[in-house]
Image 1 (cartoon, rainbow over the protein chains, first blue to last red):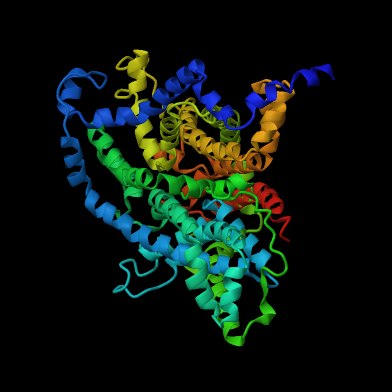
Image 2: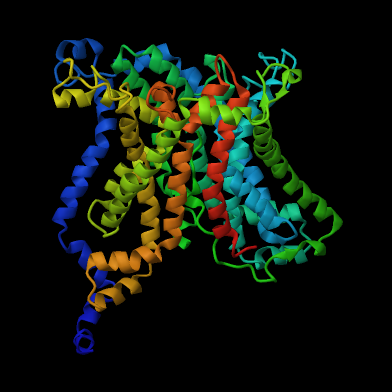
Length: 306
Length: 317
């Protein structure tokens, strides 16, 4: 017990805000060296891709990949863009990403509103069903979905394949279904935390359900919607599996899945392949840098409250 | 493949709606009930049609023999597909072993790296944000891109790694992605590059949520940094630890993109998810066998899913 009595004098110095400042000023040489080494290791793959992409193939052939000889320019990017048909691939990605994210947030917010703001018999059951759906490995559903779309006949004027296969609808629908579960879960947690008075007053004034949802709850949910929207754009843009399964014609593929084809096409030219890879990163990089806070918030939404 | 964004699947907030907060459905007008019913029905139908009905169909298809052409060709097969998978399908056991290896590697190597980075960055050191951005950057990349970028690193004749080892262009040059004894490790390192950043960002959020008073109390009691972390901070982060465990298990069951990009998930990179697709796409479609493999994947996945859901919704139900 005597040790306890010796402690108090130390306590005031350590408590309160000076504590944080103290830890900033204390030199962390070991930590810094370790983090710098890790950061360099972490950047090697990306840095190497950029380095390779900036060099003409002729120079790497002459001096070797691991050299600094020759010139550096953006010619590979131009060639890769033209040869790889990136403008088309990027456009295809947009056709998939934009509707998927809008539909996902719209449906998820309606569902979240209904299960979080009202008490009825199945709201927890439904929420569990939605959450569980998002956790399934997509490969579990691959065969039935593929066959469902293949056997859903459409006139050839609507779909070149005569079915839902090889249409953007298939990719958008399945991605929406998968992501709705996750977004519903996050949004319902968010909406649950909004005070009841918000809608109570409107209710007394005779505002209908739709008005409470659209004019009151949705504006309040904007931060969560922004975070989820950013996250979903990156997720859907990065999605490889569903287009791989459903889209057969190469000129309809989105960028991420199309890159796999380009990999074969550019195989003998690593400089072009690197440039193609860098071009594919750019949209995500822009979103990440512009909306980094939202993106990280989306990933950890609610996690810090746990 | 869509990611596993359960980072956000933090255990449901303990904010519990008092009776007054949530309005009871029975108090609504008829018109409001209809609006609400539509709001619930559309998303629910989407879930049923594209997720849950296919899941049930997957189970049914695993008990039939079918070439995927006409519905009239469907023949009952009993458990023949499962017998085949377990007894006569050579890639199955390696795939199972690789899935286990994937899980162990992520759990023992990638996750602790992420945790370590989070702890170091949580100390408010200079440049913390820059470090965070660097370690987190791979998380926003698709696994396709990670496959391509690491190919530049691993390639037998043109890759950086063989240059650095001085073996490039010699017969000793290792084909990191092609050699079936090595490629799983090469793929795992590329996967770690991404997973560690993801774990880091979740733990950083978790560490910020730890009450500073706990650390102070520990330091008053004379605990050093390591003791404080393992005895106080880590146990307090239990909810986040559970999220991390679930993410790690589910990610290793879902692992697909990177092995599929390297060599179609063959020749040393067999995973259950890749076998499912090999049996469904391309020549020799065997829907029954593919579905049996999918059901095996489903059953295994249900274990972490059920554990996670029961923990998350225990308070609500």
